[in-house]
Structures are given as C-alpha cells and as structure tokens.
Length: 551
Image 1 (tube, rainbow, N blue to C red):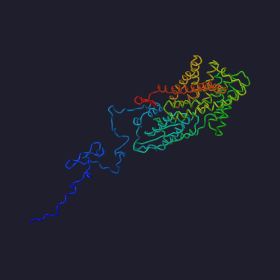
Image 2 (cartoon, rainbow, N blue to C red):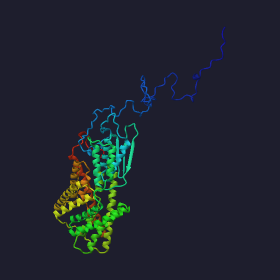
Image 3 (cartoon, rainbow, N blue to C red):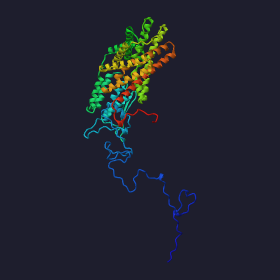
Image 4 (cartoon, helix red, strand yellow):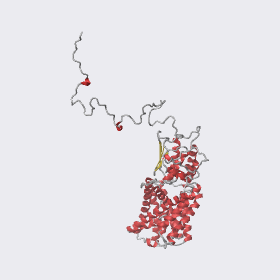
C-alpha cells in the first residue's frame, strides 16, 4: 500500500524566511561561524582560575579579596616582590639618642621603617587603648610646656614603639594631639586624640617628663604602662620649685638687670625693678579674675612705662628709656617665637601659623599697654627723647654681669631646676659677649650679631641637653634673654605715640627682624649640634622634613 501523503510538512521556525526588518545587520549570515570577542571585551575575569586548575577548598573563611590567607603572619611573611636593585635594609643604631632615632623613623616611609623586636610567644603586650592614652598624656605635657611639634611627635612615636606598636602615625597641631594605630592593612585602625586646653611654663616638670621618656626607651630598663602612669601622676602633682614671691622678685631683678644692660645705674635698676614688680602683680590679679592672656600682657606693660614717664616728668638726670625697656624684657614671648619658627622650618606649617598668631597677639598687647601710657605722657608734654636714648654705653664687665643676672632670673621665671640655672646663666653671658663684640666693637649689623649669638646659644644648649638626655629648652630659652628686642620695640612705640608713624613702624619692623634672627639662629644652632652627635645609621639618614619643589 502506498501511504497517502499527509499534509505538507511545515518548515521549522528557524528555517522560515525573515524579513529585512527582522534580520540584524550585526548578525552573521547562515553558515558563517560567530567570531570570538576581542581580548579587551573578554567576559571572564582576569582574576579567575585558568582552565584545568581547581581552587583549594577553604575552611571557615569567606572568599573576600581583603581576607588574609590562612598561613599569613605579619612577622614571618616572605617578601612578595623583590626589585632588581634589592630591598634596602634600614638599621638604626641603638646607641644614638632616642630623639634622633625617632625623628629618623618619622621621616621614613611606613614600609621602610624597621619593625620592633618580636615578643616571645608567651608574652602578651599591653592593650592598645592603654598605650595610646599614655602616649597622648605625655605628648600633652610636652606640647603644653612649649616643645616643638616635631619633638612632640618623636616622643609619641617613641612611646608606641617601646610598647610594640610599630604601625602608628602621631599628629600634632597647636591644640590637638592625635595618634592612629593600624595593626595591618586588613585590620581596622584605632585612633585616639586629646586637646591641649592649658599651657604653662614649668621646665622642671618638662625635665621630669623627658626622664620618663628616657627610661621608657632604654633597653635595660623595662617600664610597664602601670609604672609609667604612676610616675606621670607624680609629675603632675609636683609643686613648682619656686614660690610666688620668688617669681615676682625675679621679674623685678630681671627688669633691673636689663636696664643696667642698656646703660642705667643703681637708681634706674631699682625704679625698673619696682615697675616690673607692679606689672607682675597686676598680671597675677588679672589671671586670678579669669581674664585672657592678652589683657594680662597689656596691664603688665603699663607700670614700667609709667615709671619711665614719671622720671621724665620729674626731670631726673636718669635714663627713662632704660626703665621702660627693662620692663619689656620679661614680657616679650621669646620662646613662643622660637618654637613657631622651628615648627615652620621643620614642615609643621599649621602649628607654626598658630604660634606666630599667638606671638602677634602678645606683641600687640605689649604695644597697646606701653602706647597708652606714652600717649598720656605726650599730652602732659613729657620730653621723651628717643635719640638721646640711642647712645651706646660701653661697660663690658658691668654689662656681662648684668646679662648673666638677667639669664639667671629668667631661668627662675621659667621654673627651671637649680641644676640647669648655672649653665643657662653662663650660656647667656657668652651670647652677650659675642653680640657686643660684633654689634658694638666691630660696629656690624645688629641683626647679624643677634643671629650669630643665638646660633651659639642653640648649639651649646643642644649639646649639653644631649649629654644629659633631656630637653634643650632649659638651656636655651633663658640664655636668649639679653638678645630680645626690647629697645627696638620701645622706640617704635614711642615714635608712634609722637605721631612719627614711618619711624615707628620702621623700628617695629627692626624688632621683628631681630626676633626672627633669634629664632632662626637658635634653630640653626640646634641643627648644627646634631651634626656633631652620633648618626642613627648610615642607611637611615635623617631626611629633610619636606621637599616642596619636586626634587
């Protein structure tokens, strides 16, 4: 039988002819293979395993790209990449002062810093928050005591390194301290900060803090955080070495010695001392009432100016300018200016700007206080002659003794320990001899003489500080007392009071130039002193703070 053909066979769907609208211009025609996608448009990931390889099973671990391998150890992990020139090995000598070692490490990149020695497996270090809190408390005392930002950062870094925290980054500004610790690249960082709300001058306390830092960083002396907290509490509770009446008497003797330095006699000495004592008591009264420091400086500058005006009105054959200038020596914030310039030279521009602004406020307060009194004196026809006060008086022995007395009383005002007063006094006497030899005997520029004398002060102060493993402030700050620009400040204010604005501003600009010469000279002397000290290591040379021009 022949089967009858059933209805016509329907063509498959894909064999049906399509219209031009249904066919894409990018679809290859029938019988042509579809081309492979280009390499840059490959749909697979470059991190996927090649064909033929299987991933090892992971147990109890999430498949995250940021999760460390199971065999990872930050202490024993091998280097994953070795450049052609090799990895430089950084070694820092432990015999170098800890300040230089910490500055060197702070200026190294994080990946180049040598890690601290590993602890034993059965030895657990202190908790991270406790170490960070101790670091901030010690840094607060240093910053409040007048230390530079770089020195405070070096001290904070040294404390963390001593307790095994290597990946730390301390940050110091004018009123804020911060430290960040990150155990590894895959762990969350821990950050703590502290605000410095009160600043005071007590170099005895500063020396005790440096002794604590030296003990913490010593290899032979293990200081636990508990012991460090106990010693820190004792440092905070310690009384000042000198009572209030001694500080007031020191302010008077300082002003009297400064007036003798400028050519005054015994009577001028006592009048200047009396004016400074009255100004100091008025400043203490304002401080007790809670007035800001601006007004304390303003009222402290008025009594010495009033005593000089009184001598002028009495037509006494004395030197009123020496009386007024002597009272200004104890008020000019020399250490704050030195710290501001030092922070700027080492790359801490925000802190340097804040310190300079503070110095500017204090300077304006002194100018306003003296200018108020002199303006009243001009209304009473007081014959204040700045030209007569500019006569140089050469009394070498008397002036050297006066400069040393000035430095000794300045050291007492700074609350220095008695063991440092003698060297600060001798350092100030040498500074005045150098200054007088250049400015008076050789008749050279006073700015250059000031810079050279301040440089020697910084050099000697830094050397003796490194010998005793302490701060250089007690040996430097008091020694720059005879170099402070008290005369230029007074003559500028007097010229403004007499409506000689051009002469007045020129004299104030000279005072600013002398102050900057002191600051730069002290910083340069300190840097030169480090050149004579033992270097931390050839491979870890102390780098510059910043390179802002690309080379």
